[in-house]
Amino acid sequence: MKMNKFSNTSRLLLLSATNGLFSSSVLIVLDRVHSFYTEQRFQDEMRDVERIYRETGTHIQLINWQPVPFWWVKASGINLLMFVIAGFIVHRFLAKHLKSVFLLWQVVGVTVIFEWALTFITVEGIHSLVTQRPFQWISQSPAPVREVVFGFIVSTIAINIVYGVVIQVSAKYYSTEKESECTPDNAV
Image (tube, rainbow, N blue to C red; front, side):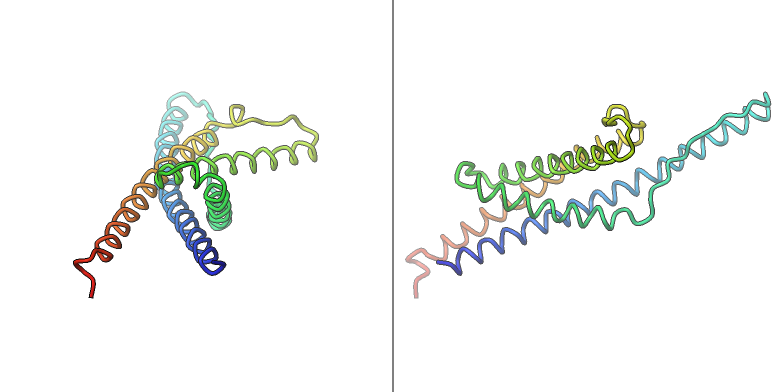
């Protein structure tokens, strides 16, 4: 009995880690695409500013939001850990109440979003206390930060829809395969 419980837990942690890796990979690709188009938009704005300067002599200041190099290494590790924790908690406490594997993985995704929100609130709260400045909500953040947060939420939900469908289909496939192996017609 203990070995079965251990193997079920290890399978669950492996599935959660796989979901975290899948999520991190997709988010990294989406960030690279977003960075590319942000850079293209900045280059277009620079051409417009140079044209305005040549025509009118007016200086316009532009802000170019540059990503932090290798930010994704830490973020992927944290994301992976959050998916493992969320997967364990959701399956531990909700698996008996939710019969749909698909719905369980949606709850895991929403739990990860709440974990990231709690992390952000904690870090921002500590930063506000240390620097003696007011707490800055996402709504007060610059537009690129709001875009990233909105993109993360939508992407995480979409990723978990895909992952939940894959897990649901594979679970049905393996359960029907096992049932067909156990029929009397296949008995030796």
